[in-house]
Amino acid sequence: MTQLIKTAALSIDFDRDLMALKASGALERIVQPALKTINQRLAEEKPAQVRLKDIVASTWLPPIPSGPFKRLLINEARTAIGRPVPQTVSIEVTRRCGANCDHCLIKDGEGELSREEIVSVIDQALDMGTCIITFTEGDPLLREDIFELIRHVDPEKAVVNLFTPGLEMTVEKAVKLREAGLYNLIIGIYSSDPEEHDRVRGVEGAHARAVEAIRIALDTGLLVTMACHVKSGQVDGISELYKFAEDLGVQELSIWEGIPKEPKEALTQIEREKIIDLYRKINSQASGPRLFASTYFEGQMMGCMAGRRWMHVGVDGGIRGCPYLQESFENIRECSLKDAWKALRESGRFEGNIHHCPAQDIFG
Image 1: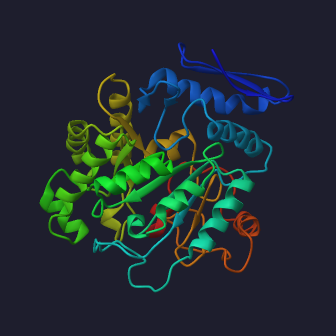
Image 2 (image 1 turned 60 degrees about the horizontal axis):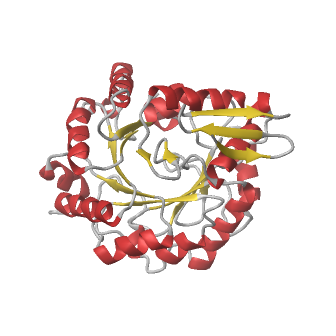
């Protein structure tokens, strides 16, 4: 049994053999719903990776046990008493990208956050209780200071994820990412068919380069998530994409609901049920990568995270509930991150729990 948290108000132990968390203390009842959910997932689903010192239940969550996971549980207690904090802060660090995707919303703009501004966001986020920081948009690997930005995040407080289309990866960069302390590398692959992926990326050879990026990262010892967004008509292709992810040897395949540009692209309820059925089937099997599905995680399990547990910082400094919602609340160039979070929370747009992605409602 490994002790995870011990304070006057809350003590939590993790039993590695039983794969279960147990709480005691004054805050026991407050964190019990979160622990029940986590323990149920640990009992019923395979983890993304079992390591010598910890277990990665999902690449989207801090490892158990760890300082960031401890903060996650404490944050759940805050949420339970009506004082939520942004557990996840995602930051668009650059407009630059070697891809030419039609769905990109920032490629035609100008300017990006400076190193000093991003460092300030990181410091303020950690002070607020954030335990997951994600660098994203367009391709963070095109920022020369990305390794310093990763290194700036205190590993006892938060894990760092980084999204890349995989066009700029080299062995040298992979080693530097690992040495900087990157927790999880997220590489987007939209299809096992190279032509289809290259069409989405708008670059010939993008698929081959993304696959090579995955192989380099895995060989370097990085935790790797292969990610994809799906729209209506694409759900039946998830099984083939999973087989491709399994062949590559990534730790997790992550399926997010794509934002529809027209009504026919919106996922149907039947398609969502197919995703959840596949999620349960795959994660009940011992072998192969874990499957993450936002349809389940932000649907049946936790509800929508936007503006409740998640805050997104745009490339221009605008604060949004998540990357998929385009309405901004304040700007970090004009106010503190804490005040921006307060403005977001007081907007009335993120009250209560909803069990679907609100960005899918644009045609509703």
